[in-house]
Length: 401
Image 1 (tube, rainbow, N blue to C red):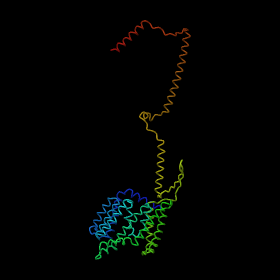
Image 2 (cartoon, rainbow, N blue to C red; image 1 turned 135 degrees about the vertical axis):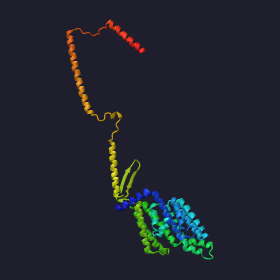
Image 3 (spheres, helix red, strand yellow; image 1 turned 120 degrees about the vertical axis):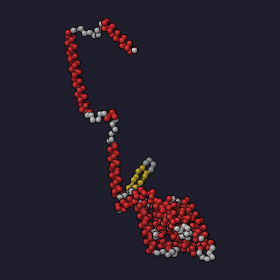
């Protein structure tokens, strides 16, 4: 299982890296297959039944959105219908105009269902279309299934029934127009319409109501219902079907739907967790189901998480960058400098104490020699006073110059 998950992850990464190139190539290939299938079935107009024309139209569809394939494919059907008969062409123009208006109004995102319905029928996997649409779309997309079945029924009715009526001598346009509804809405078409719509709605309901293994249950139940409806409907509407072929088609369609589920959903229900929390107004019940991922991807995620946590821890203790003033003290042992400063401070303090002690002793000795202590400073002599005044006047003159 881990090998399949690795392949899935690689394909997803490859598509993510090169989707700019993959999408146009996919639209081109899908347009080529669709247009070749239509021209092979109803190639009544020789001007468009040409490989060069198909390639040119496919290149245009590769540039346009995927709805461009629907629009150009519809034009091919109408043009080929006019190549068969004018009345058939007019009927096809009105029919497909109504379909396109309703399609672009309600379900413009279901282009792949309309395009792939005839492809799935040609590959004997018709059940794949309603099952996959039920897993991906809502109930409104039942309109797309009806349009796709009616469109493919009209394309099949032209060479089977309408062409014979149109080529009959003496057949009027009214006869041709009357033959088209009967050829389109035959018993087999009604059976396919009912089966497709019922299977689609059941898959949609199961997907929305069931929480665990919803996609797997939807595929299994849809396969059983599809097989039962085909067998019961064939007996009621008198439609001949090959029972063994129908069973094989159902199994093949279910397998394709499971492959689709593996690539598009792929939930890991074994690690489901239930969370409950509340606030002042509500209680919340949350169910968390992780996606299946390969082991190497989980290991890479764990290593990346550890690296992020380590980086966060390192960033907590990162110091700021030193300023230019602080860089001057790089390489200086501040502790030894501090010890030296303290020693010099103690030495200076001791010297001052010794000097003060010596001074006090000297003063005491002088006091013993002369008991008279003069508190006022001695008065200056007259000669010194005159010299001081002259020096002050001289300094004043120099300043004035």
